[in-house]
Length: 352
Image 1 (spheres, rainbow, N blue to C red):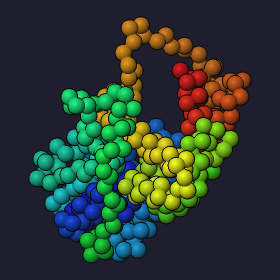
Image 2: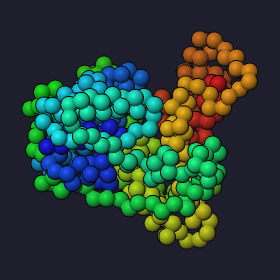
Image 3: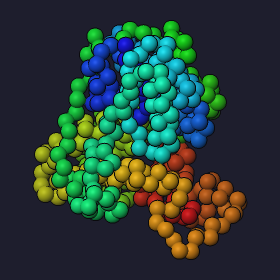
Image 4: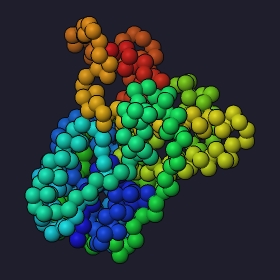
């Protein structure tokens, strides 16, 4: 028996970690709701996550299996599930943030002490951190040079989901430490979100991707800087939680490039692909500088003097700064749980 620990790969198709696990034998999939992560999450994010888990669970059940659901510290829960299932191997898809790497290192040690094989599989990006470097082997600090090599490198094709016989028929709730049903927002201590949440799961992600690649991707280069126009993909939550694989997404953009009617449209597709490269550039930055979430990326001789103004901060949160573009962005975030990329930059810059 093998255990696949889902994290930010909430799908069956184009999941290299899951397929690697099932290739080794009968596999049980699991997800652990971590209170430490939920403590920093807002209701819209948790709502999207629960919907994605519900969709994934249904996909497993259609194949005669189930997604085990557990709550607690993964550093304790994952080794406990491995013991309970008598799993010989535990796999997961790599996460590149500092906190995730610390967590995974602890899980690795616990599994090793128990004699359980473990494997972290490259899945979330095309080119794993460390794969694209300068000629001296150093990480790129400037996106332009990173991007050039990223576009030159060949990309892997998507892979098919595992076959039914590769998935165990174990049910969540029948295994100690798991629950028979998914918790609700209220169970996790959250109110219903005020915002309208995007549909989660692989099929909504695919539908959004197809719609975007069939129309707006050809206007992306020209119109993406205009917040009033809905010309962006809105795929970010799907890529964050892995309801669609990066290889499947990229393949769809390549198909759109082939369907482009002229060089302008092809260039527009390329510009969108460049945003995927930005995503991987920052994965590289996180890998090399795990402190970048809390520290300046660049060293400043004279530290920034931050204002401590609770009233101004609250006005920013409430969209009541008096600056129309900033306040409109915060209203959009509150109502849609989404903010246009360019407005995000303005709002964040205003705060800092």
